[in-house]
Structure formats: C-alpha cells, structure tokens
Length: 497
Image (tube, rainbow, N blue to C red; front, side, top):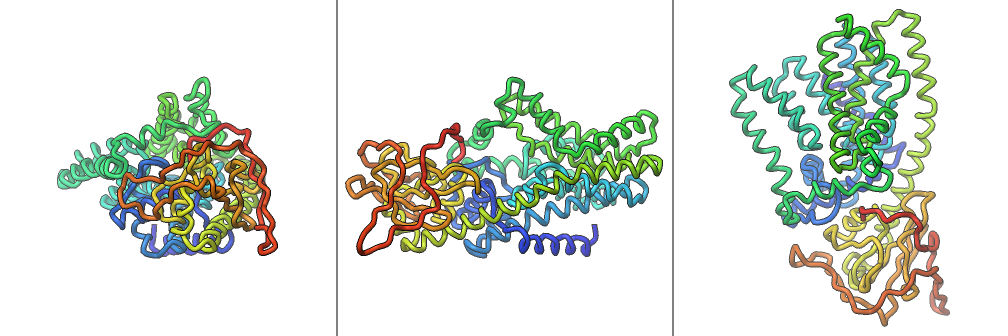
C-alpha cells in the first residue's frame, strides 16, 4: 500500500470522528487505563479484560495527550486500522485476481459489510486493526517487503493469541527461506510471550490471569451453549453477507479445477483454520465470541471476491446485485451505531462533569468505594484515575460509598441497584450520583493508592435492600436532576464490571 493510500485512510477515519462520536467501549477503556498506568510505573491488571500488549503500548504512547484527548486518539487509531483493512482487502483481491477491479470492489464491500465490523470500529475495538495487520502481512510478503511483513505478523501476535500458530508457521517458513533473519526471528519468539506474561505478572501477580479471565464468557456467548464449538461456528458463518457464500462455492469449484490462484487458496486455508481455531477454543472453555472469528471471515470475503471476479459477466452482475440487496439491512444498523456512540459519548462527558461538580476524584473518593454498573468499570476507573479493582459494579456489600448510576445503552435499565440508605447528591441527563446516608458512611478511598495492593475499606453496616430513589427536597437546594430511577435488574449478572 502506498503512503498516499494510508494517508487517505487516515483522513477517512478522522472524518468519521465528526460523524460518529469517538467513544471507546469496555476493552479500550481498560487499555487506556493500563497504558496510563504503565507510563506512571503503577500498572495494575488484577481486574478487567484480558491484557493485550499492543493496544496497551499504543495507549501508553497516547497517554501524554491527556484524559480527554487520549481516548479520542485511540478510537482514531482503531478506525484507521479498520479503514486500512478494507483498502488492503481490496488491493489483495485485485492482485490475486490479476488486476480485476470487480474483485477489489467485492472484497472491500465484503469486509466492510461483515456483521459487527462498523460497530467494532466505531467503538475503538481492535478487530479492524488486527485484520489490517493480517492483510498487511500477506500483501507485504507478496511484495517482497519481508521486514514489513514480519512487523505485521508481530503486531498480530500482540493483539490475539489465536495468531500465534499462524505466526509460528510463518516463522518456520521464513527461517528456512532467509537464514540471515534467524536471529531476529528468535528474538521475536522470545519477545512475544514476554510481552504478554511479564506485564500481567507484574500487574496482577498471576501469570495466567488473562487466560482465566478469557474463560469467563458474558451471557449469550458460544462457550455457554451445549456444544460451544458448533455454536461458535454457526455464529461465525452469520458474519459474512450471504452472497459471499455463493461466491465461496464458486471458489471451491475453481480450486477443484485448479483455476483458483495458489495464493488465494493459501489465504482461504488460513481463514478456515482461524475460524476453526476459535471454535476449538470455545469448546475448550474460552468465550468463542463471533468477533474473534471476524478476521477469518473477512479473509474468506477476499477469496470469495477473487472467485466472483472469474465468473461470467452476467453471473458477476447478479452477484454484485445480490450483495447490494444483502447490504441494505446491514447498512440500516449504522443509525443505531451512531445513536449508541452518541450515548456513550454523553456518558463520558457527563461522568467528567459529575466528578468535577463534586470537587474532583479525591473529593468523590472521600465518600468511599466507587460503584458503577456492569461494563462501565474501566470508564469510571479512568475518570477517577484509580486502579480498575478499586471500582465495584454493584453495592452488594457494605462500605461502597459512592454510586454512579446510568444506562449502559439508550434502552437498557439504570444500573446499579441501590439501597434505601443511599441518597442522590448530583445528577445529569446521563448519571445520578448517590452516597450513603451519614450513618452508613464508609472509610474513604485514595485516588492514588500508596500500595499497588491497596483497596477501599468497608464499614460493617448491613446492606439495605434495593429500592427506588427519592430525591430529598430542601428549602435551600433544588432536587438533583436524574436520568432515571435505578432499580434491581432482573438480568443475569455479568462477570465484567
């Protein structure tokens, strides 16, 4: 890919920030938190999602931008990766199809229309970046740019462990092909596990903490099905637009007749192996979420495009028309993505404003341990500049002194549930802050714990049953504005705070 194309992709990603709010999701907030902690030599990974070296390293580089600009910059990087992946997929398909523009268009559209791709890019997830690196490795290898290819492969291994077997196969091939690179390959082989495990050991004291966390799936994931591998495969097959599966059927026929380029068959084999690996890991107890299979499905879209370009012109036109029809419902979700991102951005802005109105993080933490609903823990920890484990996600035990209640999505209930001994002290359109009544006051927290193992202490007061919040009125003050009334949720408890 030329530098001009890369800069054009960056411009598209930057423009997207104006159209869709750049608010990170759960995992990126944790990476931003850990990146900042890494620069301050106080890394704590005891709680949160699985640790990923590459995103955390990038977020550490972005940390000096500040608590407001760094999250936006990370989302820009993630979206840039997603746009680059679409461009690289188009370039690779055109190359494999002998310069066919039809193959380029089908591949780019196929990747962009993969279920969830736009949403993951919008919220700063790493799937687009991973796919860009994987495609970059293939394109660079075909162009003879071995160092660039190795850098891309290394990046993949620092994003997902599923890339390790493929990186090992690449390393063996390159070891035999380029003896002068063997020292570099050996160094990479040592660096990859070290970059995964050493920070985790230093930050949590548990070498396998991330592996254990990855075995705690969220509700509805394939790992909880009767046959997790089959559930994972079925979810993966639903990611690609259905016309691409017709084109893959054509690819199989061409491969049987030896009319499909060998490089395309290698890409297809790698893609299928990736999807099967995710399914096998689901059967072994890992979550097997569809997004983990997304790189494999996207690579299959490239192969489908190469095969589609070899069809007779009427059949190719029919395939393109079918893809356009299949795109309609997938494009319809863009409005929901935009609304969801707007809500998340409002949550971020409202959270900062609510903390500022209370006098800053230290003033908030004097009320005790902060509590927030599921999947908002890293966001609150980042805003308060505390370790992730300092934040709880439901006031189920005494001593949790300050509750941040909000809706995780525009249509979800307000969480967390609270007891009658809490009273609201501040509110906005997105958040309600509640603290314990004076007789239940807990020991304070510190915004920057002096010990890496420190945490907020709890009082011995028994917890009260969750109840509806009633703002107290006073002749001296107006009742705080509240987005809604937190009540006990009937949904199953999520393992992710």
